[in-house]
Length: 460
Image 1 (spheres, rainbow, N blue to C red):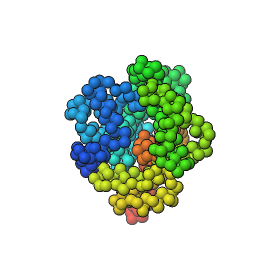
Image 2: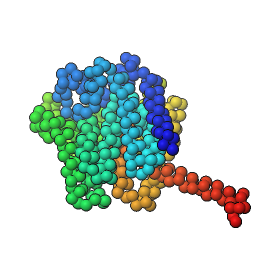
Image 3: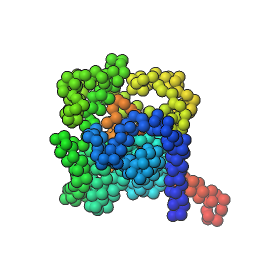
Image 4: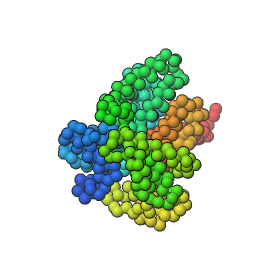
């Protein structure tokens, strides 16, 4: 049986590797034209530039918008192989395998071996994970560190070993240095640590102290850097500017029927009147941007809340077909600007079917089927966990899903649900495991009944 289980696990990792390698080869990121047009796109050029700053000058080029984790990761490969983004994308295949490994281990530790195998299988074939791996974005590294953190954190809760909380705190801090949104997740997990029902208060306080100590020590050098250079104890200046120029920008654009770019330019003009300047302290600029964003939100609370909720829903229904087709070496067709953010459901579906190519519609249907399986099994798995009274771990998973869903706001990109996927795949795997167990019992019962019916000696 152990040999069979090892073969299943090997097969999971083999399938995951082959799928990601196939996308990598079809994408051809080493091609200069592909690198220019598709790899160094969106946020990627900034990560690329910061990695070169680290390699060439061992500085962060005065950047406060990003944290150093992902650029440093890129810089390791640039130092070894030169400034070749495709090498980083290839390395991210193995980073994604790390995520699958820890999801398997979490499922095995918290629920059962088969739950871990089922969840890892779904993650291995998950299109969102596969195609994001081939992007020069921080998502894959962040989710890998998050999964490793979660394993050691849950291991600490289960075994009561303080060293696991030290490791967990350090890993979460590294994840935060990749994507600063995780800094608030630290507080949520600290709350769960202090209230975990299976241990006494003194033990929980000790766990919380170790977890906090490791986290603070790991992020403190970067906080000290920002305090020294900019007189501000913050990880980055991303929050206020993203809130104003993107999230409020999309909301105001929907309200006025203008593009986000036009609205962002208007907000930039208002910010400059309040002292915003590229030559100013970036944290001062962030404060000005946040002030304008909050002013808008206070005067348009219903509109902003409705667009935010719609964006969160879009995150889970976004099929990501343009990215899929692009990574497969074909030319994607784009929906009208901002239509995914602004259009209503049926109009958006109609635009999708009218605009998209056959390849995009076909890939979208495959993704849609997988999403429906994942979401339906998650709901059924939630019911199973509540029936089993595994409420603490279920609450932790749900809180994590909610936390990582909220920050995306109106933008609704498919990759924003990557941090949530390990959680809902594990819950869904609980239901599938129970279904398979019940099916096996029914088959066994039928076999016994059949044996009794065909062998009179059994009945006597």
